[in-house]
Length: 123
Image (tube, rainbow, N blue to C red; front, side, top):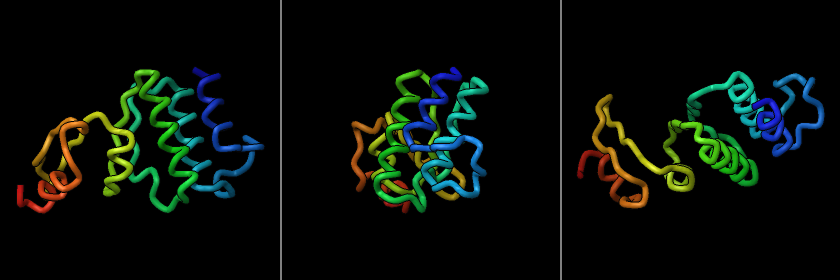
């Protein structure tokens, strides 16, 4: 897993792994966080708004990271309000409203309009 973890840091072009985190870009920070999880053999990765405040190229790289985790059979839970991100990387979507689960659907079987309806309570 250590070699796999190192691959995540190279995807975001981190030239010096001894560089303080606070000096890295948002995408580089995401890569370091995922690499750390893999290094310690995480059996589950939870990402809260993983693409918030990232540029489009960095968002794509985060999507690539999630895809790589999926290919390695590492489950990923993504908490996001960004429907484009959700549709880009998910197999299954759970919708919460006011602390209650109001939807549990396969991504391929739902539209963004369906999700919005569940979110606002009109479904």
